[in-house]
Image 1 (cartoon, helix red, strand yellow):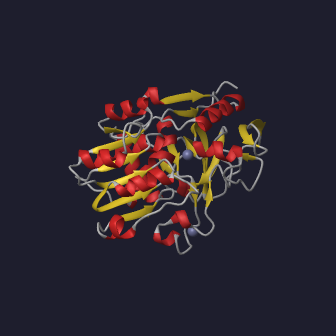
Image 2 (cartoon, helix red, strand yellow):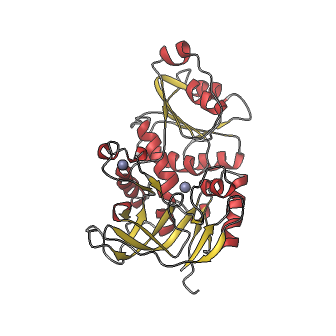
Length: 346
Ligand SMILES: [Zn+2]
Ligand SMILES: [Zn+2]
């Protein structure tokens, strides 16, 4: 089968011809219909996030049709449409038994620790394949499994509930989903903090209040817009100490700041005035959980989570096209997502 693989860190991905994976009794073979190209894939290629085995087929945002079903897999049949939960976990360690598979002792990420979806076929444990309703296009089913799932996990970790206000720092792929999900949960006002005018305009078009961080301090702007109160929840999706601190400072009493963006910088906090007095909380967010995916799939099914055609770009399963998309991702965080749709005529 055709696959596009990372063979050397720091070098472009390459076209490869590899055997179709052989599946065991607990696994399924999926014919890939769509695979999202993610910012993390650019990091793997560049060596910013470490890869421990090469060559490797990248791709952790995958949807397709079941081609083969292992004898122990009972919830799927050949031909079923599915999307893939990218975290392969043991289901028996002290974390997995509590439904916290992101901390699994032997957890592996598809497309990082094992071959991913930049290929015609992928094998995954049956437990990682979730039925994808006909209403959800494969392209949406693929990209939902990363940025939307993480956005939902962030809202859950922040204990976000109906009637609460929220500030979203950064309107890339995560922010695009977080805004839709917050609205699906009947939020009060949503503030989107950005420096990019086009992204601010698109956030406003989706019902948010724009906070242009270039014009004035976003914390002051949010305080002013909330009559000095602040917001109940702030999501930091950029990965900078500056915006993380702003996310904490714009909180109301009992507010929660969920930090999702990655940075190696440190952040200063004055505990007395900024946390203790307000009983505010700062929460780290990592990945997402299998138990959260049915909610996500249902919201997409009801069109509360959407990826309109103008937010999707399609490329073929071809190294040159995929490398081009990864180059573009390195330069900007965009909510226009590129999805690989393998052509069937080769
Ligand atoms: Zn991703
Ligand atoms: Zn485990």
